[in-house]
Image (cartoon, rainbow, N blue to C red):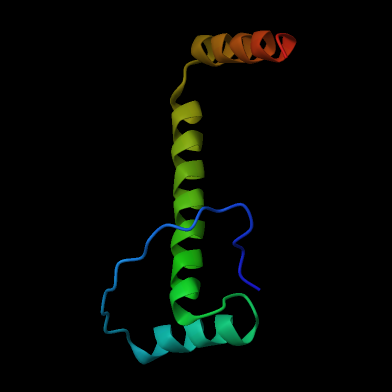
Length: 85
């Protein structure tokens, strides 16, 4: 079912949304497939997945923006930190 292991439950705030029929169909499909326990949890998973991708995109953009010298310095710091573990 839905991924909840290891996650602290945060209090939920009730909200009302009007969604188009195609969006509701996707949420209901996720629920039927066992990917979500409810329509609310389907929305939560979609948002969490989006946040992960967005964060990954930000990391990629940051490292792509580094000059060769900056990238080499980051690599040296990474090697140093690994040697300290």
